[in-house]
Length: 453
Image (tube, rainbow, N blue to C red):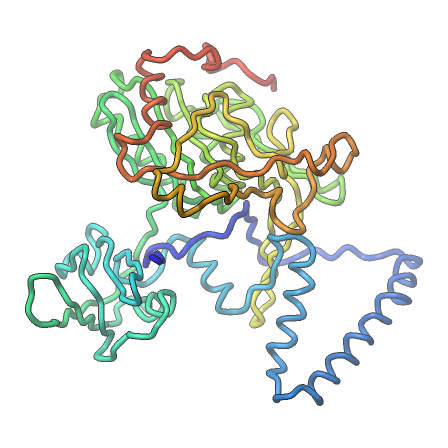
């Protein structure tokens, strides 16, 4: 088994995330408070009794802090799959992921057969400047063997405060003996946006939505316009496949980059007065050039916000397979020195009023990327999983209203993307479409047409 992580990004949990530094308390009326105290505190007393019994009679002395943390997490995970308690360390890791910056070395690593292997160094980082190469094996950190460490533990040790040194012991093919390389940690910026020229088409891949995403998108558009020639650009392919989501404000900013007007998304919470609507501002960064968005079963939440907004406004053609179907928003509520609460606080809706919760975004043109025979054999009869397959997921609006049977909720779709672009059916279909080699009645003839303001 090969496990993969990155010194740039260890992974963003599925979700459109709203980060906050304080919370507003909604006070109960007198009758509500009495009813709550009568039943709720009786149950809390029961919890106290159980806690004391475990504490005194369990076969081994339990960690009391771990018991409390597990109880809190159990309460939250019982709500839905995306609410949880974040320990101080988990909260810190999440802040690193969403900020897009941390002290590190600038190498992406995997674990193969218990060994840490370099996938690639990032340009202009300490690792690249020191001559670390793809394929190098890292066997020691500061003179200590890392055999037996998990991938996450090794990554944690390589990260650290900016301007602090670390020594890597490296085994390299063709070099007889292991050797040491001393590096000094620097601020590393997570690259959530990567781009390349596909002839006369600009290709932009967004892998997550962190604080750097919109800036990365704008820089990619500017660079590709310069490389191709702004007048020669036939169109844009925005690849959101296997993008699990991230920050809500970044999803809104990315959507706004391709729109001149109209609603992008609305969020509706438990209380009607807290509904919020987010609208586009004038200024399409691509000057109305055709846009195609690629999605698959791994495109979730913030990715679905972008796809849904541009689809509803007929600003982009969506190609691929049905997205994951996560239509809820999580708020991160700090708890001081005790970590944070990740709580589902709202559902989001596309400009036309669609909730995609447990349904997903259906592409305008379905193009299925089949698994290679060896991967298909490994998966066997395992079906792709989507939001509707998660235990305890929020039901879609249609199910809650009784208009649809829960059994009719949509499951996920395939989320395979070939490593070689030549084998990528979805990407090549998009390129052919932009070049006029495919006929598409779904492609918007007028980018300004769509949902009225």
